[in-house]
Amino acid sequence: MQSPGKSLKEALVAAHSEDRLTIGVYESAKIMNDDPDSVSFCVLATDEEYECDIALQIHFTLIQAFCFDNDISIVRVNDMQRLVDLLGDKAGDLEDAHCVLITNPAEGSWEDPALEKLHLFCEESRSLNDWVPEITLPER
Image 1 (cartoon, rainbow, N blue to C red):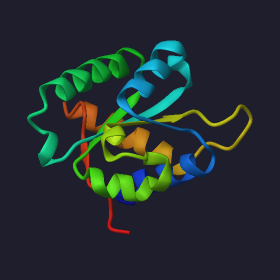
Image 2 (image 1 turned 30 degrees about the horizontal axis):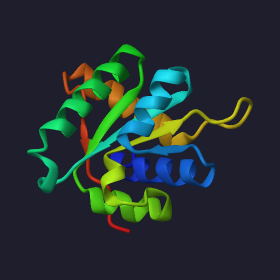
Image 3 (image 1 turned 90 degrees about the vertical axis):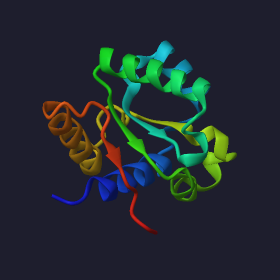
């Protein structure tokens, strides 16, 4: 199996090209509240600069609980700059990239194989009591 980082990169690129990304803590919370069934995957991103941001950690805790309650796979990424570089213009301000949601593909379209690998990785991690596994995105 390819690395989870490579699968995440592929899933983000595919979702970006299909306009299936929601970027930002508040924007993500709104989507999850309005239509949780549309959300397929959640990425929480932080780096050393934000580790002590208590408000952000509280948001993360609430988002994680929501994801667990709604069977949404969730991972952490430890390099926000790499995530922002990968997302390009859509990420806008670096501060908005703390939470990224991938919504489900349109009805009748093909499932994303990279996303399927990520769901499997998350399932395996949960079986080892690693509820929010951390993934390192590959270099460009």
